[in-house]
Amino acid sequence: MNTGAYRDLIDTGRYRYPNAVQKEQQEVSRFIAEGTALDDSRLLHLGASGLQIDLDTLSHGRDLEVSINNQLNRYQVVFERQGTEIGRLDLSESYLPAEGGLHVQTIVTPEHVARQGYDRIRILPAEGTDFRVGHVRIWGPEEWPECGQGHDCTIEFG
Image 1 (spheres, helix red, strand yellow):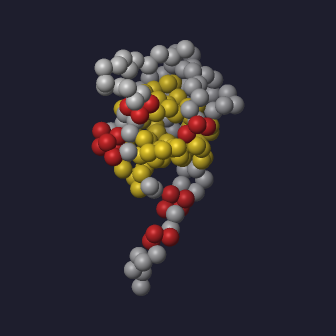
Image 2: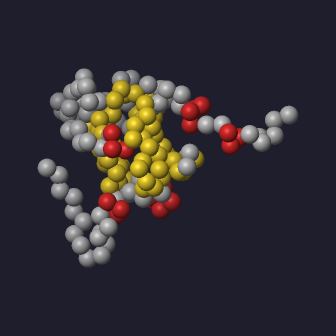
Image 3: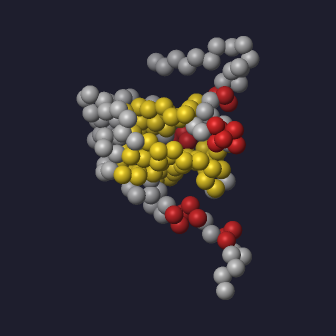
């Protein structure tokens, strides 16, 4: 009889996503620009198990910036805390750069996920072909400790 007594010994993430591309947060945080060619060697090519990003610390970041090939592709972004899924978003074809290539998109993290905090992000192929990811960056209050205390929290790029 299976009572579930050994459930804690099973690595469910490895079982569900056996061939996931595994990266640390700093390995995928370097910005890769809108329109970057899909054959660029810096891009990660995702199989069915997607991309697993392990964060350095528990994050409460509200915005997630990703560069993806979303031309005729749909992705799911899964937020986890200690190996348990706490939220999921659907990324569909929202905009196609005129010149093709990657699209940089900012996603608002669900409020309950940001409040609870997450330590892993998964980007999973949902529909389409040729899934590519350039970068994933988290923006939020912990990146600017002075935010909300009378300081300007504007982000400037370049």
